Image (cartoon, rainbow, N blue to C red; front, top):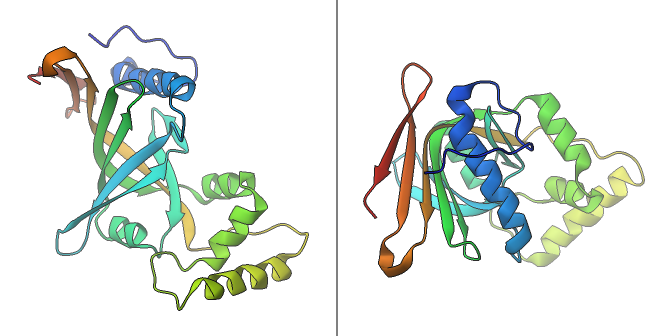
Length: 208
């Protein structure tokens, strides 16, 4: 049903990965045209040391046959949870397209070179913010954050802002995809791809 996809934006190495990754790339491309805000926004679900789940929205920053990449402060709640339990689930939902994609898989940390390159591409204010924010931790008030921003703005001046050691990226390496499309009367379409031991995908259509 979703097999006939051809998206130049994603370079694929093996035919085994073509169908799900091409579909993700095509749907993202369509969402960029129709979604009014943040078409690359996705929910990331993690678990803590006791197995309690938590979920939040982040922005997808890379997608190819190696996985889906996003960046964060490793000292944040999601950073700590992913380092402790390197598994996660993602969810894209595009209301304008009436579609969603679920992705599950293992987590790995991106290379320093990848993190450095992406950090360098960010606006300087965002780079300063990465230094100033003790993400997910309590602060006395907004003034404390603003003082930290002023401190690091003065420290780095007009020069290059280096990437903090605690700020980097995660790559989710998918083992499961589910593509969902809305249909009238709740007769929706659900197609799944599960990675098997041979490195190819088992394809299944689910009841809505």
